[in-house]
Length: 78
Image 1 (tube, rainbow, N blue to C red):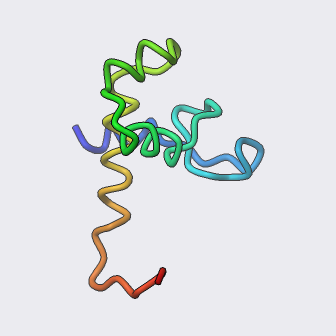
Image 2: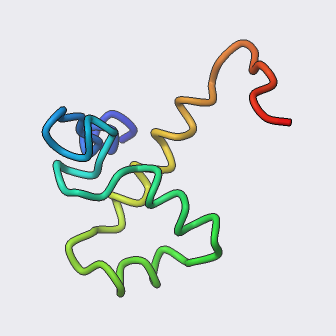
Protein backbone atom coordinates (compact mmCIF):
# COMPACT_ATOMS: atom_id res chain seq x y z
CA UNK A 1 0.00 0.00 0.00
CA UNK A 2 2.81 2.44 0.78
CA UNK A 3 4.21 2.20 -2.74
CA UNK A 4 0.77 2.98 -4.15
CA UNK A 5 0.47 6.02 -1.89
CA UNK A 6 3.94 7.29 -2.72
CA UNK A 7 3.10 7.18 -6.44
CA UNK A 8 0.74 10.09 -5.72
CA UNK A 9 3.74 12.28 -4.91
CA UNK A 10 5.21 13.79 -8.05
CA UNK A 11 8.19 16.00 -8.70
CA UNK A 12 8.12 18.15 -11.82
CA UNK A 13 10.46 21.10 -12.29
CA UNK A 14 7.62 22.94 -14.05
CA UNK A 15 5.21 22.61 -11.13
CA UNK A 16 5.88 24.51 -7.89
CA UNK A 17 9.58 24.82 -8.75
CA UNK A 18 10.13 21.09 -8.45
CA UNK A 19 8.76 20.70 -4.93
CA UNK A 20 7.12 17.35 -4.20
CA UNK A 21 3.42 17.78 -5.02
CA UNK A 22 0.22 15.77 -4.95
CA UNK A 23 -0.54 14.03 -8.28
CA UNK A 24 0.98 16.76 -10.42
CA UNK A 25 -1.40 19.31 -8.93
CA UNK A 26 -0.18 22.54 -7.43
CA UNK A 27 -0.44 21.26 -3.87
CA UNK A 28 3.05 20.85 -2.45
CA UNK A 29 3.44 18.21 0.25
CA UNK A 30 4.60 20.96 2.60
CA UNK A 31 1.25 22.77 2.16
CA UNK A 32 -0.69 19.67 3.18
CA UNK A 33 1.58 19.22 6.20
CA UNK A 34 1.10 22.87 7.17
CA UNK A 35 -2.67 22.47 7.07
CA UNK A 36 -2.49 19.37 9.26
CA UNK A 37 -0.06 20.96 11.71
CA UNK A 38 -2.36 23.98 11.99
CA UNK A 39 -5.02 21.62 13.31
CA UNK A 40 -7.14 20.94 10.24
CA UNK A 41 -8.55 17.44 10.02
CA UNK A 42 -8.34 15.36 6.88
CA UNK A 43 -12.08 15.84 6.44
CA UNK A 44 -11.75 19.63 6.68
CA UNK A 45 -8.97 19.68 4.10
CA UNK A 46 -10.99 17.53 1.73
CA UNK A 47 -14.02 19.81 2.16
CA UNK A 48 -11.95 22.91 1.35
CA UNK A 49 -9.98 21.41 -1.57
CA UNK A 50 -12.37 19.27 -3.59
CA UNK A 51 -9.72 18.02 -6.03
CA UNK A 52 -7.82 16.31 -3.21
CA UNK A 53 -8.55 12.77 -2.05
CA UNK A 54 -8.02 11.09 1.30
CA UNK A 55 -5.14 9.03 -0.11
CA UNK A 56 -3.43 12.28 -1.17
CA UNK A 57 -3.29 13.39 2.47
CA UNK A 58 -2.06 9.98 3.57
CA UNK A 59 0.57 10.08 0.83
CA UNK A 60 1.86 13.43 2.08
CA UNK A 61 2.16 12.02 5.60
CA UNK A 62 3.94 8.90 4.37
CA UNK A 63 6.30 10.99 2.24
CA UNK A 64 7.18 13.15 5.26
CA UNK A 65 7.67 10.04 7.37
CA UNK A 66 10.10 8.60 4.85
CA UNK A 67 12.05 11.86 4.77
CA UNK A 68 12.57 11.70 8.51
CA UNK A 69 13.84 8.12 8.50
CA UNK A 70 17.49 9.04 8.60
CA UNK A 71 20.29 7.90 10.88
CA UNK A 72 20.81 11.28 12.48
CA UNK A 73 19.35 14.75 12.37
CA UNK A 74 21.65 17.71 12.70
CA UNK A 75 20.53 20.77 14.60
CA UNK A 76 19.05 23.05 11.95
CA UNK A 77 17.45 25.89 13.91
CA UNK A 78 18.17 27.72 17.12
